Image (cartoon, rainbow, N blue to C red; front, side, top):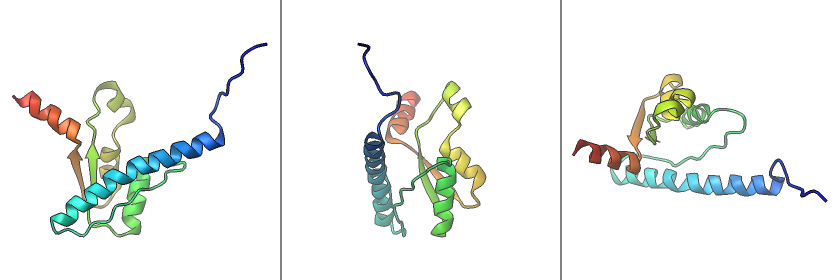
Length: 118
């Protein structure tokens, strides 16, 4: 008898992945909004589902929906071939949105840049 395997995850596995992804996205969104509010800004954390569209388009759509005066995003600092092929979500948002966009380096990227300067 040949071993059997699934070529694609079961629907339950996909739902579990979606839930974990949502939870992982919700935490930094909430932290970012909390950070902005502590500095006197009005901020609302949002996590958007992106069913068959790009993350950048989903971000721009939500910004338009809530009439955001500023879109704040983090940057992971992709470099090399990966950045060339995929581009960055923050760069794409800046190109397709008519709203001001502030890109903040992730803690990992900021630390790497700090170390590189010394």
